[in-house]
Image 1 (tube, rainbow, N blue to C red):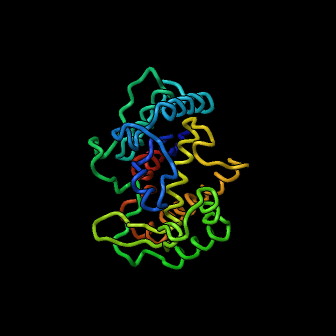
Image 2 (cartoon, one colour):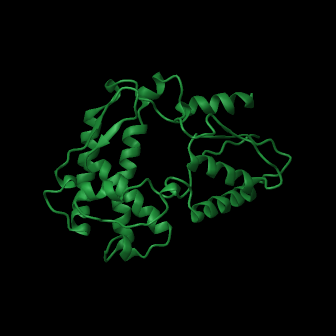
Image 3 (cartoon, rainbow, N blue to C red):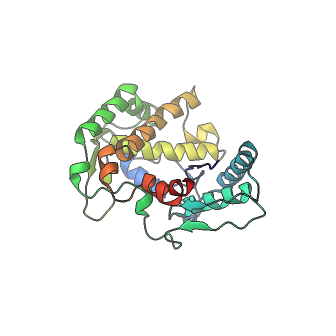
Amino acid sequence: MKKIIVSRHGVKYPFEFESKFKKIFDKDILKWQFDPELSTHLSNKGALLELLFAKFLKKYLNVDSSMNINIVANSTHRTYETARLLALGLVPEKNIKIECSDSSFSKRDPWFELNYPSKSYIDNKRINDFDQKASNLGIYDKFKELFNLDNNCLYVQSQSQIDFVENEWLKPTGRLFFSSSASDVMQSMYYHGFNESEIFKSSDFLKDLKLLLKAKDFVIDLIWNNPTLALESQKTFISCLKVNFIQTMT
């Protein structure tokens, strides 16, 4: 029997965010000092968690060195680093080659993402639906409450939208996407051992953090759950699975 393991990257340092967030929220809502060169790379804690996860999988799936293991990774530092650690934990005695389309990590890999070739694939109704869903859940009000935001700041005044730019990645903006980016940094800070009060002050920290992180779930669903685009794209993650793994099972 052959098995396919699909894994996202591990806990990473965030993209540089402080100057961007100050413009959005009109104040420093989060502070995290780290070497800019580490941005988007796995942190030490993230690397340890991935290695422990691989050791769990090794035992759970009864993996041994006699097995043929193929690993394909997206062309980003964090994903490649995750793949290396999974390989190390699964079969430490073997040096498994990680297949990666660009080892310089300078180009996006079309096999691992949905590529929007035109603005016709952007569904404004879905954007509005997710924006309203986030509002109804109280995500935006919770941001205002936790960080005492001024009603005139960009976060409060903005409308959620996705702009299309030819030959570039989508340009999402507005409170739904701002909420997603900020909550992602908060989650990373929590996993990295920051005191809860250093992230935000709350009488029920985990409940509030989980609420804010719903914005991230919505954004992932909004952008990447696009069946029409997936069916009409020449390169998708599912196609990658078929080429590298599924066809070899027959």
